Amino acid sequence: METFKKLLLDVVGVVTTVRGGDEYIQARVGKAFLSTRERKLLSEAGKVAVERGLALTAASEISYRVDYLRIALSVVGADLTDLDEKSLVICPLDKDRDVPGASSRLPWYRGIYANQEAGGTLFAQPVYTMLAIGADLQLNDDWVVGVTAEIGGVARVQAVDLTRDAIASLAEQHHALLFRGQGALVWGESPADAIRRAAALEYASQMAVLAHQSGLQAGGV
Image (tube, rainbow, N blue to C red):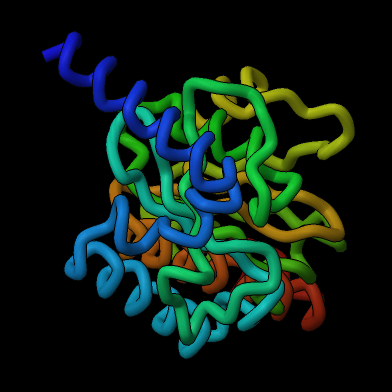
């Protein structure tokens, strides 16, 4: 099996070189690597994220684990409500090189997918989540019991010089990583699971922001 995988990767490398390098992979990602069902799954997840107000159409990113060596990632500026083979790019997980079309956050995704349980991610900027990040509000179970368990752990992260290994370490205990001024990177067992956790994060953030605005204290009447 390992020999077969190596031969397959060698063939892909030869075809890539002959037909124009990474640009060829990017242009052919949908047909070459994703089944119709997988493309539909990712496209529907992107639409749900936007419809729920969790993602902006062209400022957010969604990804899906193709196999243990690759992920499919929406390209920079992609409309998450209209994902197709031209708006997705295949990114190798076992290499550190840049991939044309992928965002500068690619090392973060590689860190997330170092966890074998990760099957999908959503990088987004929900309104209340961004307000909670900016105001440094605590997200806990004071207002809604069990909401942090639904999220799966939250960590605030400084984006400066953040390495893949640092993200991988954080992702072991936290499903949501919050970056001030940038957004929230949420991972789950699938894109749909990542969206579910992002929705829980937004709800917890909304409660924290509204309580802060109202001057309410946890435990009060």
